[in-house]
Length: 305
Image (cartoon, rainbow, N blue to C red; front, side, top):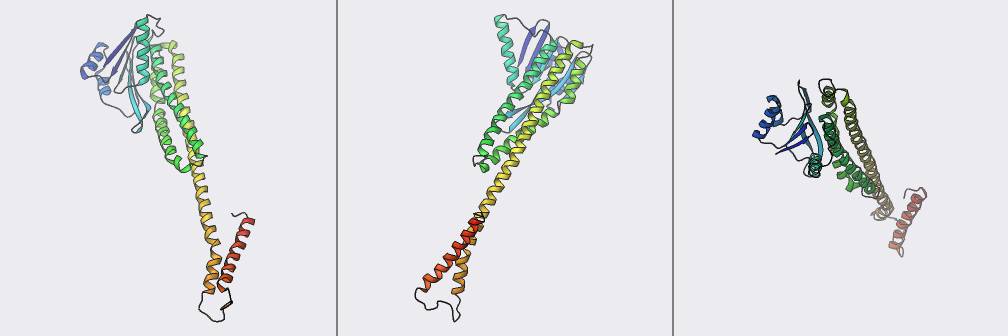
């Protein structure tokens, strides 16, 4: 599908899962090198920035939540010239769709169009894409708060999987964003040159870099928080297990006196105390219970119980 917006002298063409014919027609219209068409068709694993005399080419992957796998990387190809921007993707990306709706509403209502330069439009696109990641981090923050609450409410075991899931998502976000810096900086540096947008673009470039760095810092901080929560949860689980073992050991030790007394008086030897005495059974039982009570009192005094 091809969506086109014209704002002043600037044209934005957005290709969403384009057919070969659609892609080829747009490439020919703007005089784009055939190698870029091949790059758009074939998915890539890493960001790329390539400089051409009349335009700049950039591939970025933006992490997003995915119900099936936890996270997915959404590839977007940018081709930016002085008077045009082409974006190509093979997935539905809400932040781009929302910008389409805004532009369509402005065009329908005849509102002023503030984004009439290619550099301004590029900045708006990238800030929206990074803003979507910031929203993802707000969701991650709420998840971490809920995990922390559950963890200190005696649900340590139930939170193990939740911590692992959010930690895995944050790690993938951090890994993907860490690959943006070098190609994006090279791309923005070329666009800031006199051959393209010049000094006027430097402020926009700084804002884009700042947004990227801010989002990357958020991801790092929340991943560090998830790591701390995992360590705390592990400590609580260990403490809980130690407490269980302590109680089991104490119960076993409290039963030891009765076992010893029963073993001693159950031996088949002569001249045993209380042998044949009235209430022999109750005397022996009482000795075992008395020994157990003494040990219990000692344990309580030592605060082992």
